[in-house]
Length: 209
Image 1 (cartoon, rainbow, N blue to C red):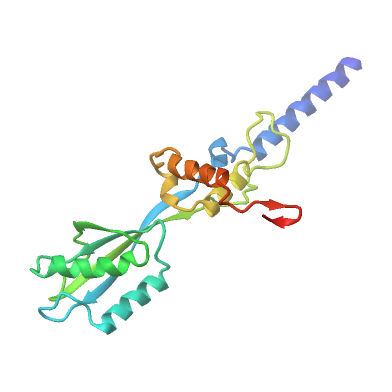
Image 2: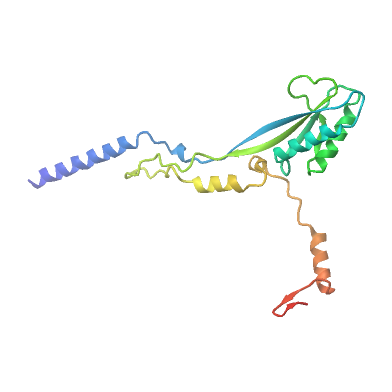
């Protein structure tokens, strides 16, 4: 009788384990690998110069400024200019670069042939921007039943990946880190010297001295 009970208990345990395995059969551990996807997108704007002129008209300059404002051009963006083979191309590129510089954007001096052929007097500006697409989170695809293989939760890493993608200033840094230039010792020394000379205001309980 005792042996029969043990046999029944054993068969029930095996059956439950089989059911659990069947429920989790569609799960793969690779699903828990949460990564941000970084892609380069390109935004274009055409500037039309008058024939034989190296400077933009007021209307074209306003349109260029409006484009930069609309796309939020700034830190982390890259810029290229396609001026074609026009003899005025270099001078026209410089005019566009001057506008970009006021927005803190440095354009490459290398001519980038992008898109359809240029029209006479046309200069094409290409803004390159890296964007982050976070993983699909939260992710609860893995069954919550007992996991005898102790594989990670399908939601493991979601918070870390999505938070990193949301707070990184320049998404390109997720692809390739920048060279460390070392500390700015001149700035540090100047701050210490100013403090020692008494030319820096220090805050006390009574206020500023």
